[in-house]
Length: 53
Image (tube, rainbow, N blue to C red; front, side):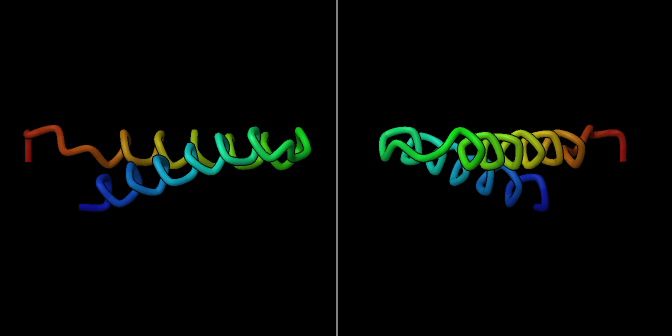
């Protein structure tokens, strides 16, 4: 369940990166949002159920 929430958050953040690029935002804000999207994706993968439990 947590993994799905993190993947949804990553999707929202990726959409935010796209909108920031279209709006001509600073590279810093685009970078921070991109890093947060990557962290959310990594967290989703880390909590992905492996089927052993």
